[in-house]
Length: 167
Ligand code: ADP
Image 1 (cartoon, rainbow, N blue to C red):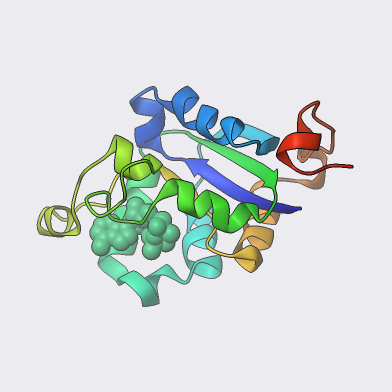
Image 2 (image 1 turned 120 degrees about the vertical axis):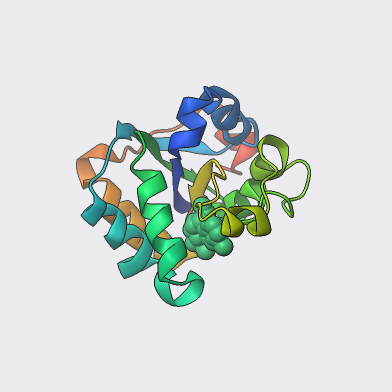
């Protein structure tokens, strides 16, 4: 079973669609094993997006700076989800980075539509509602960065036989 980290970004909380988004993960049978609302410091986001995520080399300093600003606009909901191949599954459900390109049926595709073009010509970060770990190694590092061991729970659900193949 894999664990992955998601952050419901400030735009998701401002738009009051946190419940709708979490429902999607519950519906496919993923288990919530950790959750908390936090308003992290710039340093915490630096570690998340650059030390782990190597964002400056991938996206450039300017996009990195506006994204850190955007993330500090308000609190976020951090969660750990558990399930079969959960890391790639959750990325699929989240959709690609650019909302305009994100497929219908994905969270970003269904709840946002801003393009790279628009964001870049307005010097803004893309408010695309949710972060999800990119691969298993990132997920392991991100979970350790956002949660202490005591905040991550192990428990059985009544539906796991059917949703997670539990014997
Ligand atoms: P993802 O969140 O899809 O894994 P990245 O890790 O590359 O994507 O980028 C982190 C976040 O930075 C994105 O989710 C988005 O909010 C913002 N971002 C990335 N690229 C751009 C861009 N070209 N313009 C504006 N914002 C961007």
